[in-house]
Amino acid sequence: PYCFAKNQIISSHLAVIHPMDIGLIRGYGIFDFFRTSNYNPLFLSDYLDRFIRSAEKTHLTLPYSKEELTSVIGELISKNNLENGGIRMLLTGGVSENHFSPTDGSLFIFCEDLDFPAPHKYENGVKLLAVEHVRAIADVKTTNYAFPVWHSAEWKQKGAEDVVYHHDGFVSESSRSNIFVVKNGEIKTPDKHILHGITRKRVLELDNSIKIQPVTLNELLEADELFITSTTKKILPITQIDEKKIGTGKPGEITLALIEKFRTIC
Ligand code: PLP
Image (cartoon, rainbow, N blue to C red):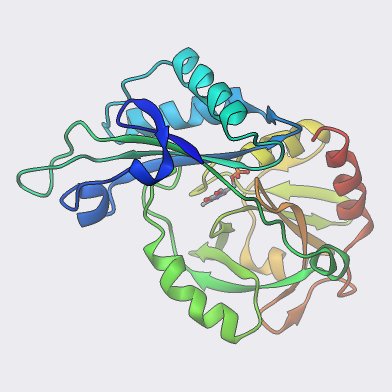
């Protein structure tokens, strides 16, 4: 496979990162991730805008324009024959003398196989663990996922797919997805302390009656239906939080209708 590294498209095994890069030493870097469908990078413009914004917000230098990135990505898709796959863009904090101040980092763009959750998870829904946590620099797609990676041993042991973060009684998001709550036919999604997902954005466009509003932990537990959204999960029904069944314990009608609708756009 080919990737973009060292400012050019090269064979992936030649891509390297310096061990003193603060991306590694301090976990300071940004990334973004999107997928292709039939060789088409889905919603690329939105992902590039978010990646560029993440770089700006973290004071990292991204030495390429949106147009240049688009052209590199097109070339990678064709060189790797990436019909249906994932593409990851990663910008590191760079090698820093004092191990603290970011410098000019390295940009990597590489292709990955895509693994969607198994069909039975969409049919039956999955469980999340509720955990008190606020992501640092929440609206930036930083590479720092140390907390959920560490915590995932506990989810797995408890049969959960992932977590849902809450703080001060309010829900924010899952570790790599946004969350939506359905009650009495009304859909709500929180806006604070979240990464603004591109899938969330598409879902909001599909149903403009969805309210962007704070969601309490209690509303989450008392919801009729819940679902999470992300690039790699699309729309995934949640039927249990901790030991509490949500609604009927099965994916709800509103969730299933949105899943159908989402299929029409990607
Ligand atoms: N929230 C967090 C913290 C994420 O890491 C992600 C995706 O990785 C999302 C939400 C969902 O975003 P998207 O729909 O753009 O994949």
